Length: 438
Image 1: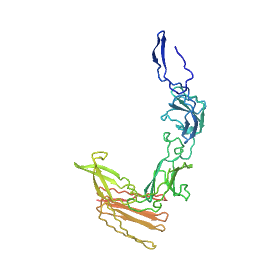
Image 2: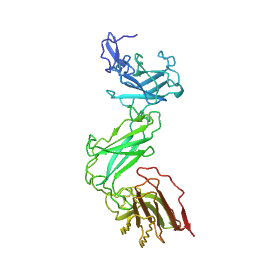
Image 3: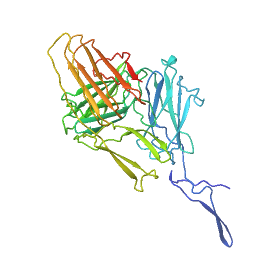
Image 4: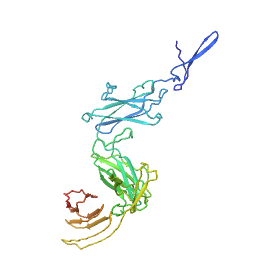
């Protein structure tokens, strides 16, 4: 036997039971299974279905939830695409994708899926549609959209972040543009063309109207320092105003031009000095039955002040909750300045000799010359030093200049590192002589 209960409210759960009756009255009741039971119907079609090209090999379909879920939450969607608007390949592998719904509060949420396109057939139109399933029936495929896969300008960088490194410095970090449907349904990726460079702008005005200062950085970069203090040499930049407040934005470029601008969500500042960032631990290894050696490098930022000491803590608890034992190591810092100068001449030689009997010292040499086709030669040497850093900074207002850097030291488990940087002109790296005397 069966009976249909009419005029129930869609989407409301009902408990149903049945009792028998004879001359003696009603007997025990039997409950319906499953219980409760909810009257449901087919959901309406998803809304706001659009297709957009992200490159000549990627097309994205985006949509929003149906206006009516049919009496039960939408469990999943199926995205279908084809080169034929009649969708003959609708349920064939490679032409559809099932996306399960993780967030049940679907009001206003934008869903999306990106599918691959063969660049060789990118000029052919792709058609897409989306169906919704509420655990009872699929919606009707009423709406479809169309797009061509074409190369475009880049989307925005990802995870753009900015923070004060000191009262006169700002650090910017970001990730390259990339397509991630779980991260965003907005335009994304490199547009199908390699990122060539980034342009960073910063200003004291939120409208970037002062005018803003603009800096170009290479495509390989994922961070950039504005102003600040050099941890090794202690030199301080005057680019930013001490204690100022700034705004920053970044835009990627490819062969087609600038992409989507990403502006940091808030003001940076007022800039203040802070504690230093963590040092870089390069290794910890046993040297005896009761000893362990720990090696580290200076932190990226000193917070605006000289590093005075390092605190080495050790404990058998990884959370250091015993409390840990520790030892303090002083950071020795001395500054000696020697300045030499001369009028213009065809040949000019200056010799500076600095002797420092300390550990962890920093030696800096800075030369500034305004000349034509000059040759600058700088050399530093040291004997019996531990963990030494030697820095040479050269500046010349010239073209086609030649700079020679030569490193010479005794071979006592030594590592020599040479880093060359240029703010405006490309650097052609010559063969750098590194000599270890035995």
